[in-house]
Amino acid sequence: MRVLVNLKEQFVDDNSRICDICSADDVVVVDGYNVMHDTTISESMDIIIVSKGQMPTEEMLYRMMTSRNGDVVNKAVSSASVAVCGLGGLGSNIACMLARLGIGQLILIDYDVVEPTNLNRQAYYISDIGKSKTRAMSDRILMINPYIKISVVDKKLNADNIMDSIKCADIVVEAFDDADSKAMLVETVLENSKKIVVASSGMAGYGSSNDIVTKRVFNRLYVVGDGTSEAKCGSGLMSPRVNINAGHQANMVLRILLGNMEE
Amino acid sequence: MIKINGKIVDATGMILSDYLSRENYINTRIAIEYNGEILPKSRYSDTIINDGDIIEIVCFVGGG
Image (cartoon, rainbow over the protein chains, first blue to last red):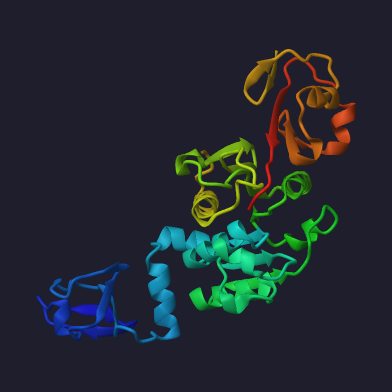
């Protein structure tokens, strides 16, 4: 019968098993799922065999990364463009998650450089210190998924320059630190476009994880957070809650792209 | 009947900016959807709250 093995058509005997066509140490992905080697091969399976620890070819890597999503999700994410405004604790982690999803285009916006105090929650490394966050994050994303189209904006966003910076985006993620900037972005983008905004408010400290929620507060505005936990002396920003919040925002982006608008 | 953030509020005839200061909102940290449309800050002081209005006020705190 006919199957695809590492993207090439191959004929195998009926009742063949995966172990008949690979080595004992190989990782085998069939139609998007890791399978055991004793799995029986069936007609037109899409089989990808990767030797452990070895870099797959570009096409195989692309196929493997996207095959995990399934066709419907993959089509929706690969044609989407998302702007991430602010690459701090929220934005750097959101950008990585969106990259792992395979979002087609990411617009990365920040004016700052990586500092040592960022490393408690932001998706950077010691070796990034002193680099612009846009540069450090572009490098990181290319290491996750080299097929994503990245554009960067090295600017502090304000009401006058924001629309130009996010014009290619379908969805705008607000990931700023400052409350006034959050409100500015929301008001400016919603007033001047039909884009959807996924914003954040309240994720400092170590309050319950379960207080962080996603709410559709306006027709085109979702806000994630507990709504009250402001970053201040005695209530700093720490990795777990910031990442929970970032996960909510990234998942809301995915849900919107798939047409699940309600929360 | 006026609804603000889902609650029925008695504010008929009030200027929106007066209502916001009465409720201790900090204007720079909020965004308002007024009857389904975003309302820019420049309009807060010339918007009079009318019967039937549905207002959503979102308030941001710092951190990210």
